[in-house]
Length: 336
Ligand code: CUA
Image 1 (cartoon, rainbow, N blue to C red):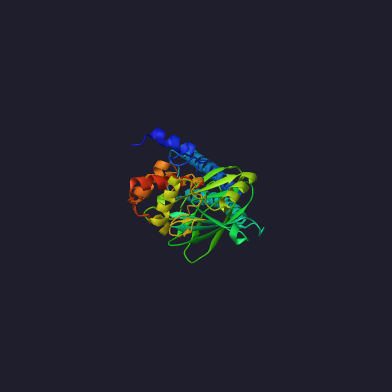
Image 2 (tube, protein in one colour):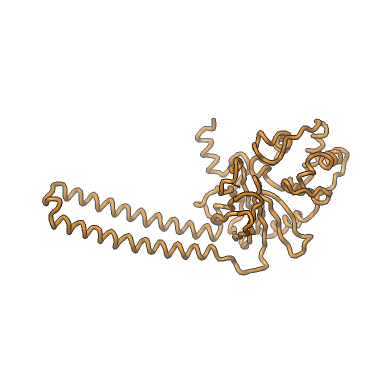
């Protein structure tokens, strides 16, 4: 059993055995939308706390000063007191609720308005049971590329995210950056995000979408523009072809075995879209949508027995001869 100290230590530092990321919380905003909802929350909390103190304080004062009944319950004086109390309550509560409503509508209007720059970066995110298929759109078709479960964005620049679903309803939610938006089959949706601080922000799928809903995380890596431009250039490249006998053997295992029936590796002819694109697999921090840290050991366990690690996932167990398996792992490790 996980000790309490270990659990809360992990939560506080944003480490859950998968990858390091900024503490996943709406109370730790890193973008304009999350900052304005955070300010709204703090405002409502403070006002509600003040009202609570005033109401409870008033109640205690009344109880103290009226300990002995000086008039029968149905006397005119009691009725006048009750009417006055109701008037005060309505006079205080209604204006406060109205202020909350106006502030709330203003925040909703501000965060919902899509920036008008039509040339801004657009990323297509498609929810699948249980991972995220990601396409970076580009006006030049050969510059578009696929990735999965991890998106990179430049710091300080708004990014349009187009949302679609391949199967059931999922929900896109990066708590540190913005609110939720559903991915609905047959209905296109969109949201925009902007990160004002570099970092890695984790997003859980926010709509129950089947038994592995909890193992459907998306990471947003916000990085300085130069670093982001470098990442984009690298992702556009096809995979490196095997350069020695071990990785060549691994490549043949990939191409002739079950892997190529589900996965794409750009530049190899493998172009199936059942599972995540693996062209730059090693550039991602996790595998299986945040389920495991991306290490050789975890990758090996995942390929051999995904159903134990993520029961119900589409990937079947794979029995591969040991020497072929080591060669396959060596090849997959070259997909930087
Ligand atoms: Cu996808 Cu929950």
